[in-house]
Length: 188
Image (cartoon, rainbow, N blue to C red; front, side):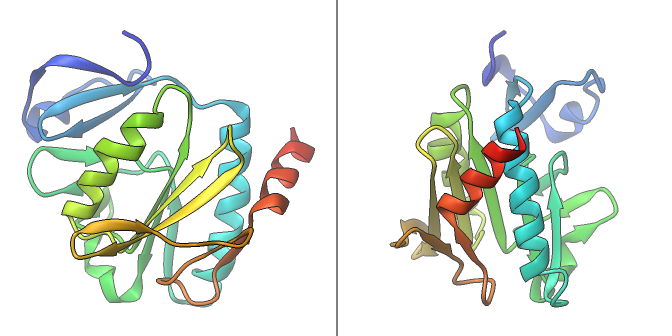
């Protein structure tokens, strides 16, 4: 199986939870299992930089919690994913459990890889919108861009940016896109 490959049968969430901990990353969307390759060094460096920025804007201001993958977000039905970054603000604290998030977090962030690009842009975006995730950030490592999507009328709308990606959900969260990619490259 290649990265972002699907297994040929649909399964329940209970069946999904019996998968062995074999070091691979699996996700379940509408009963369909997806398997992914390990992330690249650039992906992980970007995730580290973003975790610090989100932590500073959310956790240190006591607005909520920020968690990096691997960390399960379980939606209604046979749907369980592991976004790169999960933000749960205090008004949604009831979705946090010791084993993961059960319901819609406030913000989800995905860093695109060549193997998961269309999956993150379509399949996961539809799942997140359908379940009421207020904001969805897409970090494109190849194009060195960040697109922040705001949920409006059940669909995501890309917000404009001027080189600074800004959240409308997390007060004062702004990411200088060029500085982010420069920091990740310097670190590599």
